[in-house]
Each structure stands twice: as C-alpha cells, then as structure tokens.
Image (cartoon, rainbow over all chains, first blue to last red; front, side, top):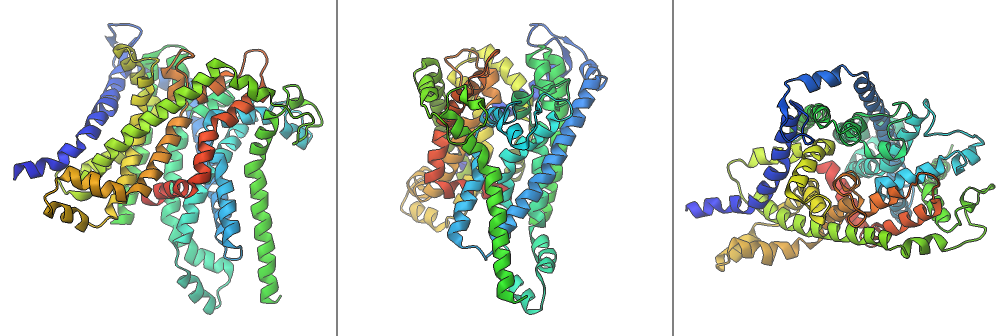
Length: 285
Length: 279
C-alpha cells in the first residue's frame, strides 16, 4: 500500500533534484551573495548587510536603467499587442482563402525563429550609417549611436523579432471564438465594429491580459538584444536593468553589487508573476 | 454600397495589409540573404541592390573553411541534442506523475513550476558562474547542458503533461490489468501514442538551446566551446566588420531552425499557441 503511494514521487525525483540543485540552491546563493562583500573574487567574503542594496538604490545609473527598462517594456508591449491584434484579425478573416492564410501565417513567424545575436547584427547592418534603412529613407543617421534614437531603435528591433508570438497567440484565441456568435449578431444587424467590441474583445480579453503580463515580465528581464546592439550606450541611454546587472558582474567584477541588482530584478519579476498566477486562477476557477 | 462590393473591397484591403506586413516581416530576412551573397565591399556600395551585382559564395566559403567557426556549429548541435534528450526524459517522467496521480504537494509543485519561469536568467547567471567554476565545469559542454535544463524543463513538463492529460486513463488500466508496471504503462503505451506532443516539445526545446546567447557567452570562454549565437556575435570585429561573413554565418546558423520550420511547422505553431492559451 505504501509502495503505491510512493510511485508519483519516484517519477518526480529527477525533476525535483534538478530544480533543487539548479534553481533553489542558486537562488539562495545569489541572495546570500547580495548581503556579502566581495563574493567570488574573494574566498572569504564578509557579511555586509544591506550595503550592496543601498549602493544600487543610491546609484543614479540604476534608476536610469530601471526607467529605460520600463520604457522599453511598455512601448514594446503596446506594439506587440496592437500589431498582433491587427494582423491576427486580418489573418482570421474568412474573406481570404485558407491556403493563403496558412502561408502568410508561416511567413510571419520567421522573424521569431532567429536567435537574438543574428537579429542584433542583422539590424546593426541595416541601421548602419550607410545601411539600407538610411538609403531608403534618405537619411544619414547613426541609429544605434545616437543618444536620442538608440532606445527607439532597440525597441523597434525588439518588436520586429518578437511580435509573432503575440500574433499567433491572439490568432489562436480569435479562432477559438465560435462563429455562432457572429452569425447571430449579423442576423440582428450588427456591423463589424460592433461585433468586434461586443463579441471579439470580451472573448480574447483573458488572453490579452495574460500576454500583457508575460510580455512585461520578459521585457524587464531582457538584456541580450540591448547588449549586442548598443551595449547599454550611448551614455547609458539604452542601459536596462539587465545590462546594468550584467556589466556590474562581468565587466566590473563587482559580483556582490551585481547580486543585489539581480535580486531586485528577481523580486520585481516575482511580484508580477504572482499577479499573473492569481489572474490565471481567477480565469480558470 | 452593395454587400458584395463592400466585401470585395474589404478583401483587397486585408490582402494589402497582409502584404505590407509581409514586407515588414521579411524584408530584413531578404536583405540578410542578399548580403550573404555579396562581397564585403558590395554590401555598402550605393545604390544598394537586393540582387547582388556580382553574386559570390566567398562569404560562405570563408565560414565553412574556418575550423574555429565549424566548431561552433558542432558545439551547438551537441549541446542542443543532449539537452533535448535529457529534458524529454525527465519531463516525461514528471508529466506522468503530474497527469496520472493525485498526491500531496501536487498543487504547490504546479505553482512552483510556473514561478520558476519568472526568475530572470540574469539572476541565475551569477551563482551558476560561481558553481561551475567551483566544480570545474566552466567552459565545457556540461556547463551549458546543465544550465539549459532549468529553462527547458518547466515548459517541456507543462506541454507533455497537457498532452498526456488528453490520453484516456483506460489505457493505463488495460496495461495494469495485464500485470504491467507503471514503467511499462508509461514507456510502452503512453509515450508511443504521445509522439506528436513529444515531437513538438523536442522541437521547441531544441530551438531554445540552439538560440540561447547569454549563458553561452558567459559560461564558455575558449573558442572550442562556444556556440553559434556567440560565434556570430564575435564576428563583430574591433576594426572592420565582415558583414557578408556575418550574414552567411547567420544563415548557416539558422539552418536547423529553417529545416525544422519547413517540415514541422504545425508543431511550432502548436508550441507557440499552447504556451499562451494554456499558461
């Protein structure tokens, strides 16, 4: 009898082990690092209390990075949802035949399949001073090197390479709305806009909220794209919390301070994730 | 306006909109391919053309004859395949337990799996760096295989659990009545039937490993151990950039993705939409 009860635990053993060693323990470690001084470089780090946290909260670069992260996340989010919705609505229309739809949908996903370093160098090529974008627009701008334009350029690239995820998710949600509703509405004389507001939107709202939260969490963690395109410059105009933490750790080797910053990042994301889980439970239950 | 005319107008509008969207999505890709077949000087020669004036394979040959660069591809393949294999194995075991059994700690475990996706990779990078150096695994295949597991397992487990949930429990009972153990139920019955779901998970996992950049950058150091995403970025030289080579390498580096994409497109899309709808 007891053996039978143990079965599921047996099957869960590998994954539990992996998560304990590779998730729980490192998180405890990084929290430990954040309250010590001179970790990793010094074999005997001293306890330092909240000193590291106080250091980053007093650093203007940190707050600038946080502001940039927020700007990055909110703008990306807005366009992800909007573009995703617009294209999903177009793709979902029954006015186009399904083979065309299948083909176009497949082609739209392509930007998402490339790894971040390929996307970054491709756009560095295109947004180069003598690159194709400047040629077509008739400008001669250094997109990633200009203090005012760099952030906009990074956000644009981010939107380009990640919007397919939102497009496919919203499209799947749209296709889940039963046509019965639309037919009934047509009979009652509703026009397209009314159908959208009264039928489509309420049905996809849960998915939209879900995507919004996920996107925000992911965008706040983002650093690779920024790092490869601009490195956080020029003059910190594209520095995000991610690149700030990374530079602290692997450029300045200040692992303690970097750990504190990493812990702050984690707490931010955890709070948002709790919102997300709460919201999902409300939808399901 | 007559209804059919209005519908035709809408159709034209929609198709135009979709085509504009296609240009937005694909022009950069077309440009990448175009530059890969140019000589490095032609990349910026004005007026810039999509079809190269003098198409050449020199960029590709420079990449393919460079042993260092070829090594990046080998590393990426090995790491991605090993990680995918381990992930599938561990996730299948866990999914079996989560799908077929009710037990104490199930709900917290579910929540835990979801919460792990909220931990920023950057936060784990610092302790991983310390741990790997301590165990002497820094700058080796295992460094990346081990770290990737943490990112691939939650999603893989969720996907496979969801899939096994759709399989009727009668199958389990049939095997049990014949005296089969749970191991038998899982590997002889459930897994073979789950092939579509497993393939989708494997593809998604492979893609995650192949495309990963940050950890590959920080946890490897030597040229022998680096992977394709890092290798491509390293081509950005200090003085002059070999743009055509970078584009050629990008295309070569995307080949597994492209192949998987062409042949397993539906699985891709299943993976993408499952994540959003389900999570």
